[in-house]
Image (cartoon, rainbow, N blue to C red; front, side, top):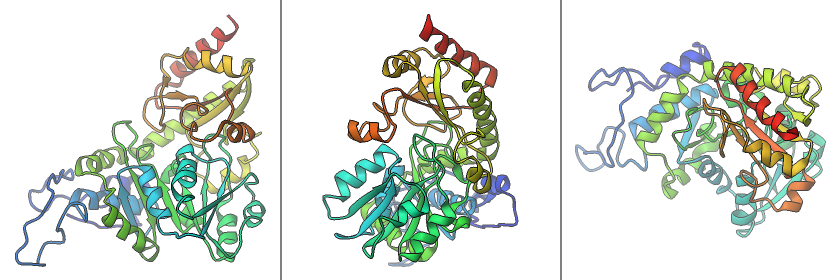
Length: 389
């Protein structure tokens, strides 16, 4: 099976073809699902590149090759979930090592840092100031890793990847960027100076809410200990999961164009609604990160957060008042989702910390799908109008 990576191809072409040449055994145009746990060897240690499917599988190789090409990385490693990918990165650090992260981050990442790695001696620190200076103020000789999301989850802050990478490198640390909200179609952090990129491939890359997965991309040198962990700990995706993710990634470019267009229109419209107190979307000219997002992103994404007038009670009624926007965790699928970060995706963060960061009970998060935007707007309008009924 071809693992060719050709950066002369445009993004959409690579998403469909890189790592996915015709199967050499049968000529199958679509990458097969290699449903095997083990591989027959010619003699001890003599095989065709695969020994056991925890260590490697041709369907997973195709996915990893394709994902590396989309982030223009030397290598990509696939994992069973986004948190498994995050765990693999953090596993490289030892007691006394420090990790500096932006305060606004996915609740699962916070839980992992605080309840898994802090007890093991890794020290996480969080900055409320997402500027390069805010990160620099928390860094010292023990800082080994800077971890950021941009846009952040759920307040959609935009962080300067290039400037924060420079700060991290000046302090002898590396920068890892969770690029899940943007997708590699909209943003490629490695080209901006980041050292590692992490994705929950469950989200935009898979794109159909039917598979869970994760990935880490970067240079072969930096990925060497992460690859060791991938095999040693065994948190790998099965071949069917890899196949589903490959199936989804083929349409990533066209899906992201529609996600962007729908979210931009809905965000602009939501700013006019009397029921809405504040809209968080980097595509709005009034967003504090709009200019930076315009420089480092190809588009502004499909995620919108908003605070409703009326706080928690209004949010509860709104969350249960939509028909097309399904009340569910996750994001990035073709269908639109609505969620309540305080009780869903960020429930693992203590309430007082959440509230101080702006993730209170009145915050609602929208994952805008690729349905007709007129239907999505009508759905939200009905739910908003019910608040004053």
